[in-house]
Each structure stands twice: as C-alpha cells, then as structure tokens.
Length: 82
Image (cartoon, rainbow, N blue to C red; front, side, top):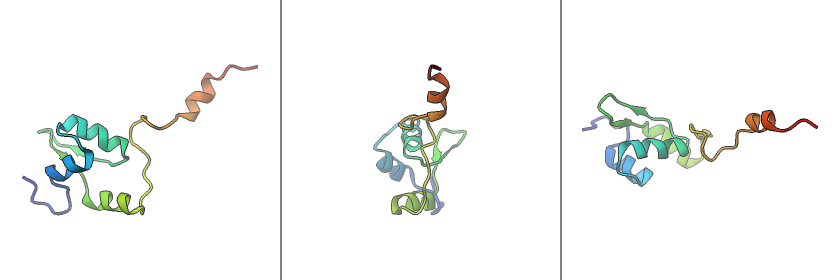
C-alpha cells in the first residue's frame, strides 16, 4: 500500500483516469500529459504535486504520447514538393 502522501493512491489514480487496469491507467495518464513511473510489480507512481499543478493550470505539460497531438514535423516531411 502507498504510505507516501506525495504520491497518489491506487484508488485516486483509478478515479483520475477512470480506468481500472494499470496499463490502461498508464495510457490515460500519458494522454493527459501526466508523467508516471511504472514499478517492477506493475503498480503506478504519480506525483500528487504534478497532478495538482496540472489541474490548477500552473503546469503546461504536453501529452507524453503522440495521441491527440499533431506531429507537424512529420507532416512537413511527407508533403509533396511542387
């Protein structure tokens, strides 16, 4: 169990992501731009301060995964030359 008050508890992570499975939680956190650490046992560590800063609008963190974010550099490379 998580005794560290600086990290979200597993129920808090589940509530934040609206997901039950750890892999789905990690994907959802990445889509929200929240960095997390996956421990060797598969549990997730998320800094409470980061989540609070993001929710309060103090931190501007782009999503960690490419989902929902347009890769303009790739679009420029694929554009046919006239």
